[in-house]
Image (tube, rainbow, N blue to C red; front, side, top):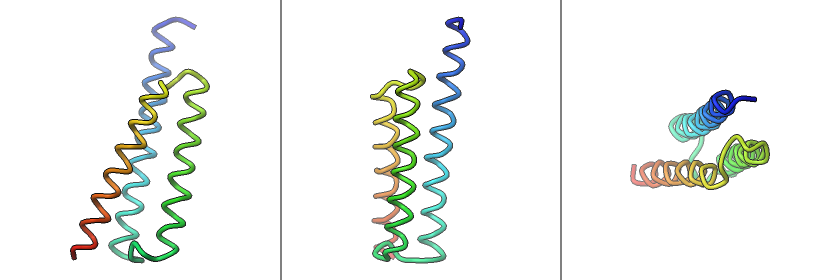
Length: 93
């Protein structure tokens, strides 16, 4: 595989992981707005399941050398910060 092709695969892998992180954020936004409150067990279960799934995807991409471990950690941390901000904002309503 050429270096250019490998770079393309890495960029695509990160784009897919970022898209999945964005989907989780949107899912939680919708859930908080329409379905349940953050202290509800359903909310926590959905959030835990989604975050676990994303972390496994990131681990897999790291093992394939498509994403640097630090980049994957930063993506998860960024999503966690966004979700915390969303949670805090919903609690102020």
